Image (cartoon, rainbow, N blue to C red; front, top):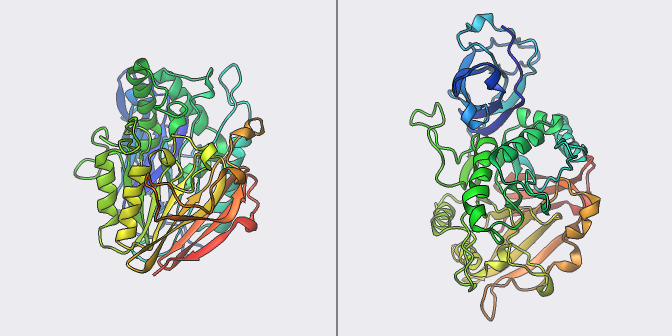
Length: 481
């Protein structure tokens, strides 16, 4: 039997030392009337090393595809070796009883991934960005391929350098409201259809099939500035539909989705969307800054994230490991916009909670902390300086946005005159302990970033949509202390 290619995927998700998750989606309705069936197939092996011959493929592993999850399924590969590059073949069949030795894989393009190293001090390199807008014509088809060209440039970078450990997509992977309220969608099938079209484009598809990819949502996965304008109908209609599609296509292959005790398959729906993971010298905490917001009238009561998420972040920061701590916040933590440009959607509208989080870092003199952000359709690096017990404490915000943002919407970007790059960060009091410093300026065009991290420091490098380097915006810093 011929193994058929997935219509979305395969997509390599969370990839640890000995385990990886891979998503695939197929139109299984044509193959079975049942809601779910063991129609997915995958086999893998260490990638061939020149001069050493090829390893045998594993026997095909069957995994479930589920029509209740848009024909998708996530397979979990276990018992892998740390720091090894693997190749795999994944697809689906129309008859779940077919034997593995009868499968024909000739139409399947192999993907690949590299497991995390065993060394907890190993350097880490990753690509990151956010905000990828796509034009759609009246038939609902992607009518402009410029967005996918950015992912083509990221794919070429990975091919040329071969040392990218993963990709971090920091929000607005889809735009469910491309014309704001005029073009907003609200039904589950509309969200699912949008994901199929976006993740089915050739370059993003190949990038995600060959590089572990982590994701987190921002507002446009639901609607602009969610939940500021949400109606009662939106809370019971639009939000569940958006989150169901998000869970299928962005969360299912990531650490937020629980596995069963044996770690062999997805166990249940997640009760929160934030998550953490570790690779080499880096610990990552990925914040959910959208679905847990509390929009109170007073600044002190406003909450960007829930008390539970804030407590989990605090415990993660204070685990005593002295490791590099990178916090993904889809909205920018700092710098703020100048007073007459400020709005309540970003952390500048949640100053009390932001101050609590920053105070944890300052009071405990954590010197290897940086934030990764998107949202603002511009790229920059900012430092935040404070002092504790006579010692300077510095943290950073690395921003990259957008991966593609059309020229027609250039007015909706950050520009240097809008940013308060040398003042004190607002904390809700009369005086602030935190001094902002904008480093290397601000780039207001399409770009993706590469970040290289070691226990001693980090390097941030920016590339335009064609993959050309932008060295005037590159930055290298040693961690303080």
